[in-house]
Amino acid sequence: MYQQKYQMYVRVTPDRESDPEWPGKKKWFDSSRWLKDPRYIKISDSYVLNAEYKPIDNLNDFRITLTLQEAIKKSIDLELGLLNLDGMDNQSFFRHMKDNLSCEYLRTQFNSQTLTPVNDYFLFFFTYDGRVYEVEMLREPYGDGFSFPYASLVHKAGYWHSTSPAGYSYRDYLEGKPVK
Image (cartoon, rainbow, N blue to C red):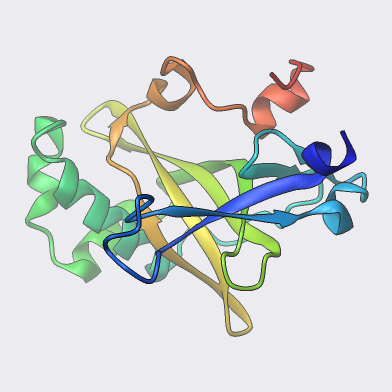
């Protein structure tokens, strides 16, 4: 029971393509150091909630808008209403998104090299042409700050929390929903 309660995994790339778990092997580890701390709540074998996560202080950040712009480019086939944003240069896009972003913390994942819970996922929202859209983004520590190296596809607002099954998030925790 102890072992299962504190076991978590991260995905790593196996050494050989012939590995049956290629391209993403589960690397299991003992996360008791963090899960014994009440600010961390295990929500799955790969994610935790950090009840004291660091909020994003400045949403008017070029690193955020660059990642968002790439997510929009990947999502044009899904959300044709974003087509006009696809052609904007980086500076114009940044100015267009200034004061047009909000976000909510979703969950945290362990870094696959350090096995520390530092990779935070946020759901970003923006309005374009009268419609609200959302995109999930990963925030990782980088130097003295953060980077945003990954974003999901862009969807109309409400998609992330309505997918079946929707992932457990900080919002669910605040609403008192039990972890499944």
